Length: 158
Image 1 (cartoon, rainbow, N blue to C red):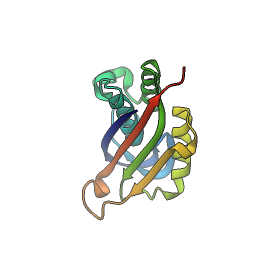
Image 2 (cartoon, one colour):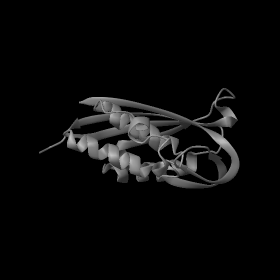
Image 3 (cartoon, one colour):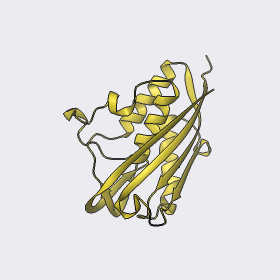
Image 4 (cartoon, one colour):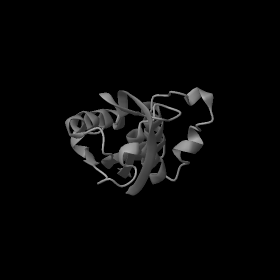
């Protein structure tokens, strides 16, 4: 078994619209600043997958200085990380994710995020946990969103 931990944080960009989080769109929410689609949850997930196999991190593989990743869909990053773990002989056992934000309220969207992530990783939704926490007024508070993800990998069956 291998364990990986991923973390990401993005600031709000001062606009409202469709927030991309966990591979889904959340309407009428504050949106995030970033080079790609700024999906903090998928960025943390990709880093957790990559870290579990000792691969370079997301910023090294998909640098924000590279224009081809401008506005990129973060699902591509997760798919690339999943392909790397498969090539290394591993598969996802389970995912435990925590999103930290005061806005928007994520409870109604967590089941959709679980399903979206499970499809990306080719696991059952019951193998994915998405939790949401507020900051109680501490950073990032109303200034952004942070996410932390832990993944457990097990040897792939041959």
